[in-house]
Image 1 (cartoon, rainbow, N blue to C red):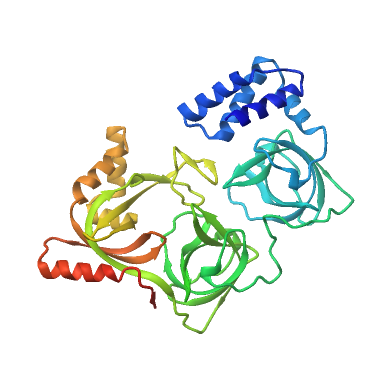
Image 2 (cartoon, rainbow, N blue to C red):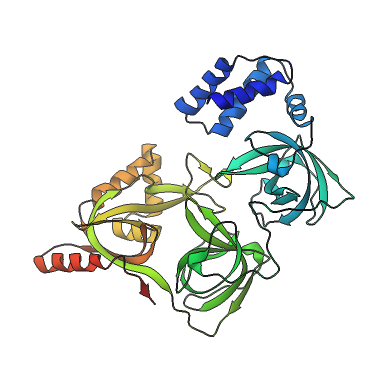
Length: 423
């Protein structure tokens, strides 16, 4: 906190204004600690407060922060920093969010960094492979990586010279990406994957063509095929070669995405899938926070937290039902993710009914209470693919009575839970 406060104070000192560091720190502490405002939002709010207090125009302040010198990508070290860059557009990515104009990678001789150009900035379209002088871009941070954002204060000038690009955190896609096993995939890669479509998920969002799971002998991974990629649909149970897909990491989980640079080739072979396809038998002892009636981002389907998506910010969410359950066999526990269809069937509660319950009570928590009342303490057999610590439940069967033989079967069954199977 102290370091952030001193950084803000230093920025005001450049304008000849000495803001007491204690005042800055107190305001930061109140926003971050008391009101749980994200650090970067708190910094922006505190900065704007003192701009107003000292009657400093925002444009003047932010532009002057960037004016003193040209910044190299390797020297981008501070969230909230303003900079001028001379860089080449290394790559433009597919973008489906209405508030974003363009997104991709910028590079200079010192490295490569992600950029986002916001639509309301009304900036000229960038061309892949061209070099530009970017004035007054602001540095943001997401998942521990810096990125630059082009906004209303930014100006862009196309250069006659070509900026030479060096290495960096992000590596642009080669013309023909390397074939990798699912178990070897890591965030930030462009790769080719050869596998069988294990499962296709129901998808209602117009920006997504297909989503599901694909696997090879080393494991299973989630995939998303965006509608804008204009690629053919895949069929569950068939094997494919997916060329030039991008690997992303979110919440510690790896997934792959297909875009216009990708291609899909159907294979004659039947690829064996190595996964922790599991069956578990136990009592449901907990239904965790984040269960019940939730809202998802209409773009990426991630669950919203306080109305915001970590990738797309504040969005109008779409309702969904799910259960994040903990099952206990007596000798072990297992986390399980139960989707809307199975939740409705298990609890006898439709999504429309859940929405009506929440509206009547002015509290979505009543749905979670209802699920706990109906389901906790009962025994279930669940089957599905095991990813990380969760079983993604394909089927769930209640057990209305238990006897000694069934208990012995349960213990034997759960001992095999962590043994990989090849399908």
